[in-house]
Amino acid sequence: MAVKISTISALVVFLALLSLSHFSHGELQLGFYNKTCPDVEKIVFGVVQDAFRTNSRLAPLMIRLYFHDCFSNGCDASLLLDSTTSEKTAGPNLSVDGYALIDAIKDELEIKCAGFISCADIIALATRDLVNLASGGKARYEIPTGRFDGRESLASSVNLPGPQMSVSDTVEMFEKRNLDLTDMVLLLGGHTIGKTHCSFIKDRLYNFENTQGPDPAMDPKLVKELKRECPENSKQNKAINLDQNVSSSNIVDASFYKQIKSGRGILQIDDQLATDEMTEQIVTDLAEGDDFLARFGQAMVKLGSFGVKNKDAGEIRKSCRSCKNRFCTA
Ligand code: HEM
Ligand SMILES: *[C@@H]1O[C@H](CO)[C@@H](O)[C@H](O)[C@H]1NC(C)=O
Ligand SMILES: *[C@@H]1O[C@H](CO)[C@@H](O)[C@H](O)[C@H]1NC(C)=O
Ligand SMILES: *[C@@H]1O[C@H](CO)[C@@H](O)[C@H](O)[C@H]1NC(C)=O
Image (cartoon, rainbow, N blue to C red; front, side, top):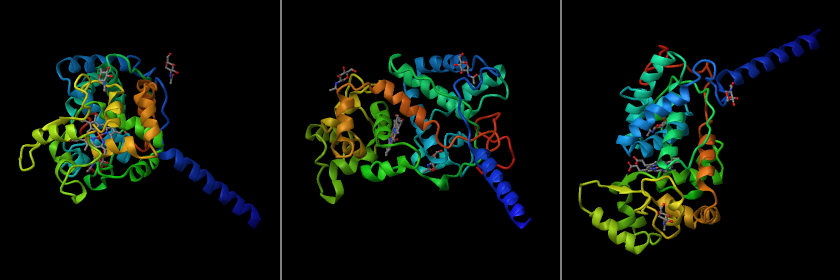
């Protein structure tokens, strides 16, 4: 009898654990909204395409927003919540934007498919479409949906890599999110588009690791050009293209890898990818045309499956800027 009871309680504990693991983990599917909102992907694309025509900044902004949202708390749109202490108020997220586009898509979907589409899926779909548009239609990937929106968003739970971290520390952070070394090199290919600011690179130009000189990994010609854009004592914080190939700085393509191979990466982590023995070969292959566009899409899909919430752990917000449930930490 005693044996039987402990067997039963073990079974109960096992089942409880099983349901717990089901409790928060979302399962993604291609066409999750087939029945509830069959045109969702068409509707999203329509809004995105119109916005893209008049604002070429949207692609880099949204790609970065997707990365920041997914990387820390999982892809749960926690970055979208408005409050004085939410994630978007913290340092690294201050230059993140694209929120108005998400609002516009959400408004449209609340008219056509009210209550069904999560903000987290809107981010994933809009990012996919912007990658496609910014690659001139060459990078098109399918992305599964079924994410639910999170109810926690705190600036104090910051967890993003910094541009001065080593490759090995950076890959450790990616591995904690089920992304391997190759995924990391592919995802940093996101820096094929968009901009940074002088404040992130002045140390590389003037006082690299307290040497009073520039980072020796940076092409001296580029150092000279950037010093003109970013004078040492200027308070002006100019925007600098992350992809220094003038003919493709606002295009999603593989030229970023060619640039970093010749010391023309802007952020320190970018140039390091090309020289670190862990990543050097991967970079060379991608620079030589190893199908970056298709592989970038797959890495984005993988990033988009991290920390996904199911309907018990999340919700479908009415406005992407605020939780529906009153038990919300933002
Ligand atoms: C080690 C990882 C990473 C570091 C340290 C990093 C760091 C940065 C920094 C410092 C900026 C410039 C911000 C500014 O000046 O306002 C930036 C911009 C950007 N990052 Fe990353 N990033 C990383 C990974 C990624 C990944 C994985 C993606 C996407 C797949 C991404 C996409 C972007 C984009 C598109 C921009 C340009 C944003 C714009 O033009 O407004 N980054 N990143
Ligand atoms: C939705 O439809 C697409 C295309 O017909 C199909 O590939 C996909 O498996 C469907 N997904 C679901 C969850 O029904
Ligand atoms: C930026 O947003 C991410 C993802 O939403 C968040 O987890 C992270 O903590 C935020 N960064 C900062 C500095 O708060
Ligand atoms: C610069 O971009 C163009 C257009 O995408 C590309 O054909 C070329 O290979 C790139 N060159 C370098 C050196 O990155």
